[in-house]
Amino acid sequence: MEKTNNSVIILAAGVGSRLKSRFPKVFHKIGGLSLLDHVIKTAKDINPKEIVIVLNPKYENVELEFGVHTKKAYQEVQKGTADAVACGLNVLDSGESGWVYILYGDIPLVSSETLLKLTEISQKYEKAAVVVLAMDSSDTQELGKLESAEEEGTIKGIIEAKDIFDFDKVIPLCNAGLLIKKNLLKRFIKEIKPSALTGEFYITEIVRLAHKAGYVCRYHEGDKNELLGVNTKSELALIEKIFQERERKKHMENGVTLIAPETVFFSHDTYLENDVVVHPYVVFQGNVCIKSGAQIGPFCVVEGATVNNAQVGPFARLRTGANIKNKAKIGNFVEIKNSTISEEAKVNHLSYIGDTNIGKNTNIGAGTITCNYDGFKKHKTIIGENVFVGSNSALVAPVRIDDNAIVGAGSVIVEDVENGALSIARSDQKNIQNWSKNFRERKKCAE
Image (cartoon, rainbow, N blue to C red; front, top):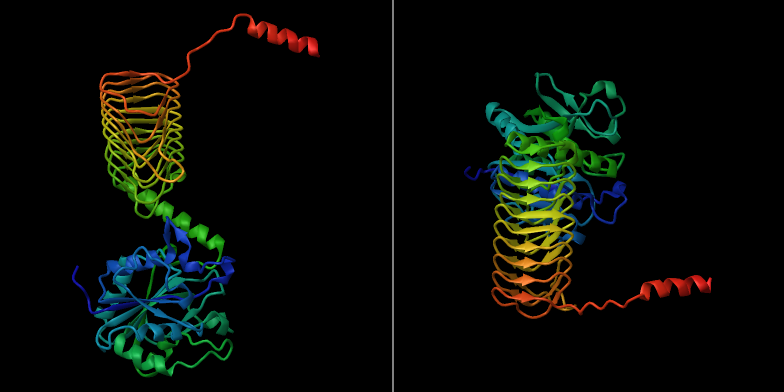
């Protein structure tokens, strides 16, 4: 899609005190991504000329995953949404043409398809000056409402909830975003007066001013689940639920088998190919890629990992940098971090494998760990092809075990093992006759 002449201003300077958190609400996450990043990502999908994010200056150094190639403006004092938009306008280019989207950083699930509907309306109706993205708010009196104008589908104002005294005289729809002609936004924003009740400057006053000046203001009612905002932790949880349901449906429509969909949780960037099977109670965290044919067993946690046509779980944890190749097996209570497990290799039970390369057809016995950290630095373990590591072994990195070697069970390996060698590093077994019998008798007499 080519760049449009439209711009986007995202309002994200609010404190969100009702969340009872030391972090502003727009930095709280759903699907592993901040509310604000969700909105920025959607804004980028409509390919605007510019995106400006209006922030509280206290948080100017907060890193945003999708913040690259965006501009930032800062609202020094919280004087309302119109003041925040004015801060954003100061950063936009000085041109008069095009339209400006006003989006809210606490409405994270709005889709690019919905935003483009506003553009369609602005193009369909030549006289349109403002298009409001509206949401059904008939079940609450805590949100502002639209006022209908004479022509069907048009409005003459938006009344903030704090200023509504007669709910029978308003349309049960609230504002969830705006699309405004840039030249009119610049003109009318200077005319907005503060609310007599709160002293704040509301951007929604643009509709009243435009209508009064003879311009047409329209609205588009979007999907309520897409336009819900966040003000409380309960609402945050509800939006997470909606997000997860949307992700589950998307993956199943793409050919993924979810045995118990309601128990599987996704990150915003989880990538699953068709013919992946995911068993119950699996959590996918950030930057996960699961290739066709993979089986993810019950109660696994996967983050920053790639799984090819392999078997993982149950009760496995794959961490950042784990790369599980075709026909490999990662079993129960195994943790893999920053390691490549090659084709047909097996790590089946109760093991930790960190900073390691494991070759083809190698078998790692139960209870084996790679000791990759010396208290200061991480070190690498290299295990070749067709290696057998016996149960309950500790491989102290940096160390290399060459192809076809065998490590005896219970060994602590601190030196390299040559190709085809057997390495055993444990104390010789000593059996003391009658020791156990005499010990028990002594204890019994002492009682």
